[in-house]
Structure formats: C-alpha cells, structure tokens
Length: 171
Image (cartoon, rainbow, N blue to C red):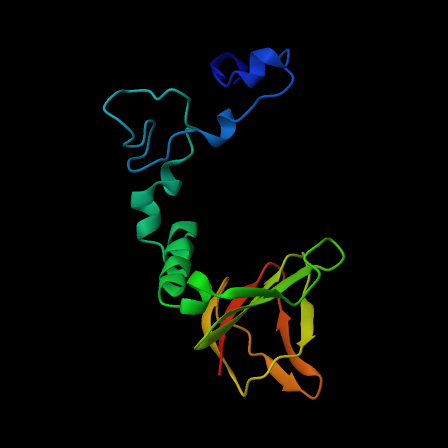
C-alpha cells in the first residue's frame, strides 16, 4: 500500500515512482502469518503479503520443485563445475530479443558446459550449435528431466518446451 512506502524515490517523484520497496520486503522464513519468522516483533518495516505462508523457507524446503530448491540445485551444480565458476563465456545465440533462446558455452581448461534457456511461451528447437563434443551429459534441467540434445552434421540441437532450461557437460 502507498501509505507504507519508504523508499525516498516515492516522495521525490511526486508519488509516481514506487521505488524499490516491492523488492525489499523481508524474506518469509517460517510460519503461516506475518512476520513469517522475520525478527522478534509482530510487524516488519514493510508489510508482507498475508498469503506468503506457502512461500516461506520452511515450507519450500520440503518441496523438491520449489523455487528455493531449484536455486539450491543450481548452486550445487555451479560449485561442482570449474567451467560454470570461472570459465570463459561464448554466446551461441545473439543474446537479444531477436531469438527466444539464450544459449552459451562456459569453457574452462578441462571442462565445457552448454547452457540453453527457452525464454518463450512455446516449444522451440535450439541450434544447431557447432562445437566439438561426442556427447552431452545432463547436469541440470528446469521443469523436469533434461531434454536430450541431438548431434547432427551441422552441430547440436535441442528441443525445449516453453520456459525450459538445461545445462549439459560436453564430453
């Protein structure tokens, strides 16, 4: 609500720009009502929505498909990969709005990793991406099992459902 906004941008803009307050609401940790385990008091500096109970860290920890656990899996994959931690980046798609796919390689001296994101609302076939490699081993997939890339004469292609992302180690 407007009356609880605290970011200085709000008054400075003549109440036209809400500023960052929507991004600064305290993280819901536990419980089924505000303040969801955030601090000892009954309220926080910015109000938390009353329907955040299912989004607390405690609630999402038990759900393998939760956003929290997706990030935990991604962080684990990244920590185990030299290419994802410190490797050079090679864009395989333009990286702009001309394509619904963002694809890139991360390359370290002893490891290469392919990352492909379908940013669209429909299925896409990404590629072909030309780089050496005999197979791609799945490291991570968003929304279920990693799609299986295919190697053709012009390079690798992968069919991704809407919103799907995949990460593969290049062998």
